[in-house]
Amino acid sequence: MKKREGFTILEVLFTIVIMTIALWALSALQASSIGYNYSSHQMTIATILAQDKMEELRNIDWADAQLVDNNAANFTVDQNGDGTPDDFRWTVAVDHTNADGVSGIANPIDENGQAQPANRALGGYSRDWNIADNQPTTYMKTIAIRVRWGAAANKSVIITSVRSQG
Image: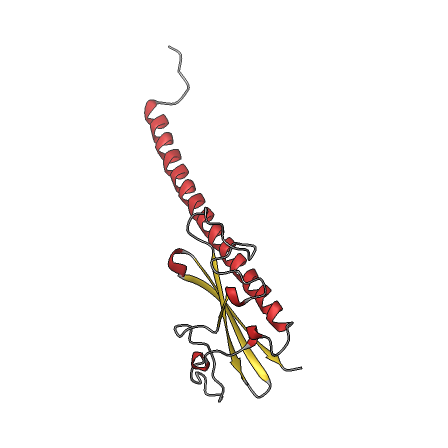
């Protein structure tokens, strides 16, 4: 009798089970990767929208309406003991919303900073900013820009800069 070569049905089934588990794990990893990539994309867009607004605010006239401190209560107490208030309290009404900008576009805005199309699903970005006069010292303004997105605008990017007069 000749010896037959090949795989037994048990070896084939065992291999199929191992391959199925490996492919399932890879598909779960791929799904996570796609989700993280999308979140990263949204954060990048929000950061660009904030940086664009900061660049605009740093290059307009010192007395422009967009640089007026409409609510001095937005600045918090000194957090690190250096004698200067540290951060904006975003729970208080903000000084300016996107509608106060050059183009007067109300929130929400799209990835290009333009008005969010009405037929688009929920989403978009919301951009607002606070100004603090004479912070950290006289003849300076602290500018903080916040861009929010996500369900109920629960994700945000905040950038802060100081501008001097003149």
